[in-house]
Image (cartoon, rainbow, N blue to C red; front, side, top):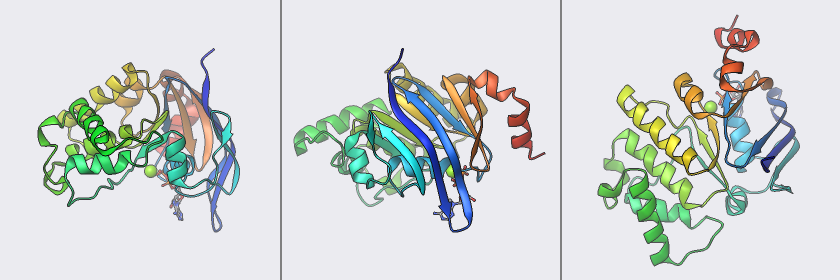
Length: 240
Ligand code: ADP
Ligand code: MG
């Protein structure tokens, strides 16, 4: 049996009277790409925000390698091995590509001295296809390249679990194929990934398993083929 890296148990998030995430439970096993899918507003980003420590759950437990991380601050959870990208790219636009990645690596759970951090950042930037633009300011990059920087920055934390929140959103069809190929290469590296995604082709081709959310609740869980043919899932997507 594959080892469970992340356990989410009965996690709920309330914003005032709104229940954004309602009693969610699921596991993520090592080397698995788990998709979290569901209509807009169903609670996917809120789930990612709780796992990464952006804000605490109102109730429930989130265990990383058996240790409860629910409510711990984001930098602490990053050090423990969870890194993420944001649905809306968050970078330091005036700094160069490599400076952004090194700044991210400083929050990683393995301390590196500066020269070592830079070399590691270079390797990652080559890996995501930015080897040629390491020293330009992020503000001069195309959109897909800013997404690549975010990915490299998350990888610089040497995460045990990588959280990608709609990393493919906003890409044109050509970029989309490049993006899917890049995520597939992470999968082939054996990374453990939670992929929040709307792009159905990406879900079908990248995810081992999917959890489907609707109005904060889990409505289905299984292989992409199974959940995408599930009548309740189709209803949730069509809003019927
Ligand atoms: P998704 O990522 O699936 O589109 P979200 O997790 O962003 O959904 O949002 C789920 C619900 O929680 C929505 O109704 C949204 O408006 C609400 N919500 C998300 N974040 C906050 C917040 N920080 N404060 C108040 N409400 C929020
Ligand atoms: Mg979202």
